[in-house]
Image (tube, rainbow, N blue to C red; front, side, top):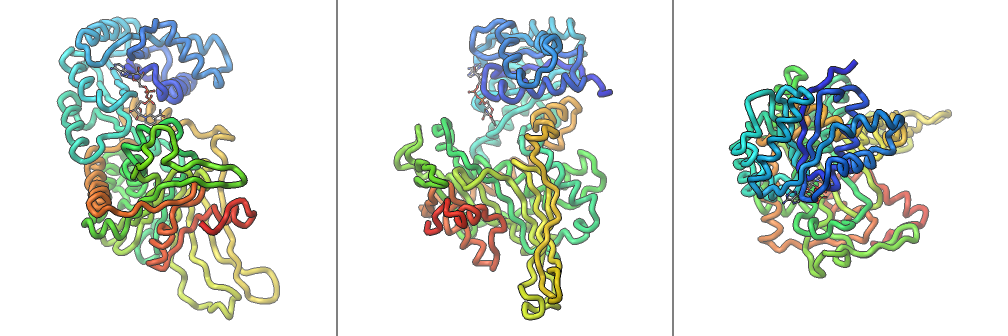
Length: 505
Ligand code: NAD
């Protein structure tokens, strides 16, 4: 039986997309598990003049696919209250406080509060300020703040935002969401590394040749062209998700598998990532943008034709690059990364490419070259891992053939992994911030990203194009070829072999 959490949760932006798609279903998940039971209430606030009942209907609508018992769902929704609120208006915070006090009394939440800011980051500072000045944040019980990305647009704006939040909340009270950190397989990276001696003992430059992290999306910018054009792939994906994953792969083993120790090692890993000069950044990072393309007889428009995107936009929808880590363990090992929109397939995966074994067997003796072992960690849409090995082909001759040990399943299909947001909300209620981004990590990641962005702008770097639904510009392949490497995951090959994708791009 799960221990019940007593809490008053206030969601700013309760009428928004994130609240409906992710937060309400995740809270319902916690209710079904008994983590939220009797002693909790949710205040939803936003500008629309809704009633409590309107919010409850929206909540019921958002969880309808998951409801087995109507009465149980109604009971869950009865814990929701709505307060129309303009975040800029001080008066509204007084009403909010009154409602909060009433609900604390009614549900006996013991003063524990979580504030979830599911709205534009422009408002984060104002909200934090008012939560303090109107005495909504108190010393009675705990107060925790969950905030969404983006955390700033560069080091300067991120620092300003952090200072604004720090007037009200300490670092320990701030939970910066990176929803990838809530994903089952990201958390499994540490299990694979630290619970398997066969990996942890060789997790270093002596045995690992390179590591490849791919975050591929098949979709374009959809209706978010306006937002995306001001951001680009480097800020939208690399600064947060990719660097977080990289730090988990690169960090030293923590002394204990406890929040404090993991945090310490992750921060050290971030600090050890080599900060490029502008010249180095130009050599190691490549921006790309999709043009019109076609796969399997389906046509796609180019980025500059997308709604709300300027015709002459220079925003990158793709980035490939290599990071290096300045420490004993990783000296000289490239961590290749790539991410982009309108790539061949949706897929997030990590390939750890080991060095090839000493050439005892020449290709004459074994019929083929000895392939490197590759550990692949699949994050989405399928979850799992596989390890490629060299085996002997059956028969008289001594010929090698690759074999994969594979454990992979479709998490959405099996429904066995809780939503990342549910896990992260649960962690917040537990006061466990190991799966959130710490300020020191955010700060360092902006230092690393700002140089790359500046280098591209100052040197008018060419924006390499790629047809929609390919794996990015040729320059991304050339980046690896320079070091004698290649991308392990090349989903385009499957389509090219079946003549569903042209190979002459
Ligand atoms: P949205 O535009 O759908 O919702 C914004 C909410 O803020 C609405 O409820 C709106 O009423 C409220 N709001 C706006 N101005 C207000 C004001 N002055 N006073 C009070 N309320 C106001 O946005 P969203 O997609 O839900 O995203 C919210 C945040 O989450 C953003 O920071 C976004 O970057 C982040 N995020 C969203 C997603 C997603 O899947 N939607 C994913 C990752 C991060």
